[in-house]
Length: 90
Image (cartoon, rainbow, N blue to C red):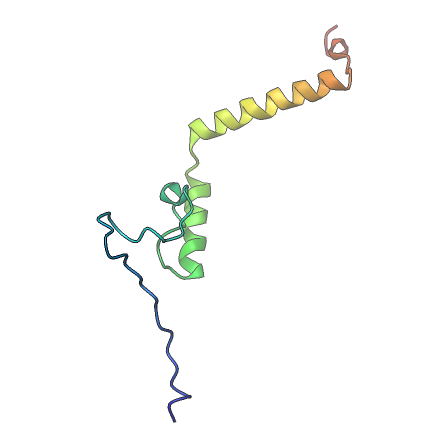
């Protein structure tokens, strides 16, 4: 009964004259090297734990940049709709 024992076969093609490192046809996102949850074949519990650790230890530099960008976008939006900022000044 060979049809009941099916296993997934990997297709690992290596080009004949390729002298580089790894497989050139491997599909990978260019930002995966900076993510803590990508790359490792953990279960969903391990990925969830990594995400919680990232939330507990945030990157302060990224947060400041994000706040500056959000503030600039808010002021641009207020300028576009002609919001009068003088109501905040007495």
